[in-house]
Image (cartoon, rainbow, N blue to C red; front, side, top):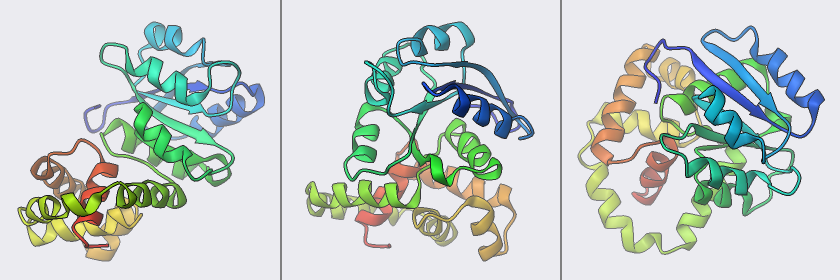
Length: 223
């Protein structure tokens, strides 16, 4: 995870050169984010990570022989790997789940990307949170529910009970897909205070990402 205020280094991996150029232009004016390299295949991703040491990799799902899921696994085998956010045009039901299982921390639809949103997603990923499109987050939660979440509900309830009221409220809003700025406005708090509550909560819950926090909140029956 990067420290607050530290520049986030980004690697773009996509076999469409026009999309890579578009993403680079989109990110150019975003404060605190810098594209350090871009490559056009999964095979080039690991060498590029080793050469440029990005904090976050934006990785296309549909590429050549080595697709986004396989590339995510290869990156995850590196020592101190960057955090991977998978990009795709279509949100197939099982794809977000497979992305998480492969080691990705986020999953975004290309059709939803805009400078503010992609910049926030990159910062969230670098900070240890999990940026997901609302549809994709729903698929992951449904997978957890179908995979025997009832047997872990009591554990989730016990963990959530360790949170303060404010921490719990912050977690519920974020687990429902709200952004940190939106949660701050809703709760009449500063963004830094929301982030502080989130950091305290993830520590108490024993999770390392916003997505896993959301799964626990859901298991506990709060959303």
